[in-house]
Structure formats: C-alpha cells, structure tokens
Image (cartoon, rainbow, N blue to C red):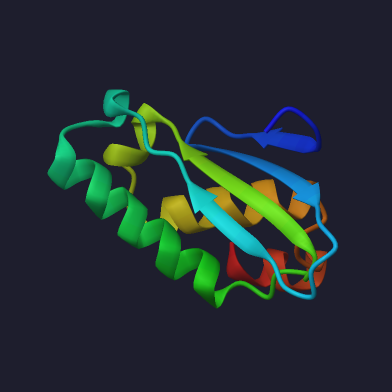
Length: 101
C-alpha cells in the first residue's frame, strides 16, 4: 500500500487507507520469514480472530503484516500489538483499545 498511513510494532505492522465504501476491508500479508506454512497459517488465523473482535471504524482498507516475532508471540501479545497499532492509526476508539491491554 503506497498511500495511506502506517503503524509499526515489533510484532505487527499495519497500513490503512481510506476507501469510499461503507465497510472496512482487511488483508493479511504473512511473509515466509515468519515461519513455515503451519506457523504462517496459525498467525493468520489468530490475526483474523483478533481483528474480527475489534470495533474497527468503517471505510478503510487495512493490511496487516506480521513480523517474525509474531510466530512465538502469545495470543494476548498479538492482540495487544494489534490494538496498539490500530489505535495509533485511529481505526478503533482509544477507550476500547486501552481496556484490552
């Protein structure tokens, strides 16, 4: 995503860009540096569940790029990293994000 805003965390990078749609689309780009296919799929499933539970603002395209540390991170650590990065991008209300971590 060349345009838009980015937020980085040692576990997860997020990029967001406004779209003209009434909903938010989320994509996942899990690099081979994260691990083998089983590990990459586990990280992707965890991220999908975490983002599904977040109260994301509508009208954005979001790309989640887990970093190699995400392979060994617990679900809670990955969840907190997602909340922190989404909060920096103003994709979620800060009150909701702070209650989770």
